[in-house]
Length: 224
Image 1 (spheres, helix red, strand yellow):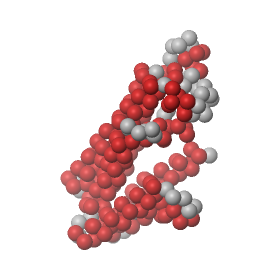
Image 2 (cartoon, one colour):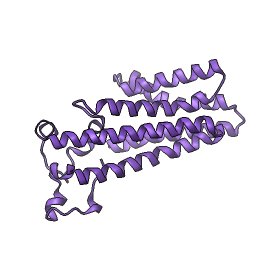
Image 3 (cartoon, helix red, strand yellow):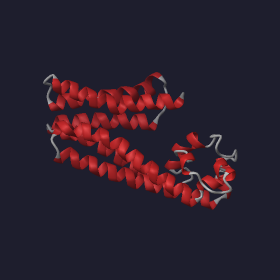
């Protein structure tokens, strides 16, 4: 159920603004107005989390603040490209957060992966808290993975900022939307390769390693 909810949110926050932008442009709405209105879906989603669910979500606050600042700045400067650059700024901020968190007790990659992986039946039942406290290798794996994601997100942000100012405005939202799954798939594949070689799945007591005498079956590797 959580995975379905997460998928709906992704479609709403990424696909919604893109579809709305092109519908409005097709009706002859200006670049700035179309971009401003198409920023509504993610802002509404973040507002719902903060107001209706009354949940203190740092991500939701960041999304709302970034959208408001982009709208105000674009209106003052009179350049809609600030609104296009917003996605790059947000992604870059995530990348910086990943890098900063890498040396702490809660690396960002671990924070996101833990709810998806810790209780998966393919793995053993050892507590991740115990693994973190007793296994230096476990800590190193998640710190390295967090750095990998941080660098990947910063690279994604750089591309977004570049296309925001170099390409025609009407093509940027489509390219930016396409970039999300590309970045995610590349980082997921690189992450799984690293996890396998670094021994994460062995530390987690992966059953497919036990069932095959320690030999990995690549088709059975889970996603982080």
